[in-house]
Image 1 (cartoon, rainbow, N blue to C red):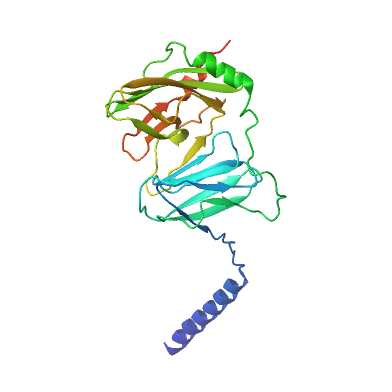
Image 2: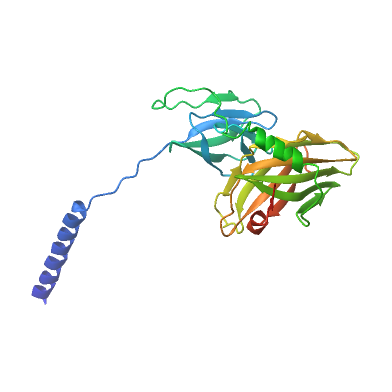
Length: 281
């Protein structure tokens, strides 16, 4: 019995020795950690980040953070808090040269900096603003002028609340541009100041416990008043975007947000609507 026990003990010791030696020979894979940059934003002021290359992707970790590219400019990202004192969040920006910029966002009533030029030491300095290739295209401006006063060709793309109406009256296409004819109506007795009117591509279904995924579509040109909607009034605007299609399981959202208010509206636009856009002759 003692001999059997001794054999078992010897075997266990040998096994543990071999296992330890084998484990030491396995290379341990190490990951390079990219530390995020701290950044403060606030509710009543806009923070501008100026990147050395055009912005290709923006991902924000919370709906309490508002992020958009400056209209007609490819490398300037504008940030604002959707509410005061939001919980800490994050932001990720990827630019055309493949650079990756991660940020940790905190709320501050008085941020230390509002305008920041993001410097990449491997990039040659260039002018502050990089404009869209078609941002000042006279053809786009002329097309928008033709569309803005046309009669309705689409029904059902509408959202209304608090006597405010966001209504897509038509979608047109010409060359590589899509044009959205949008009616803004205020049937209330209070003026409506527009904080933002923006297009996003969203997932149809959002997985819980993950950051909100959205891709903003930056306008090439906007015709009409996007500053506000006076009380008891209606106005039409035309917004031009580079032609695109919507991937499966996603939709295009047109979002209207009120400055210092809660009258926010949103219209969902499906890919088939874009595919059936009227050709502008």
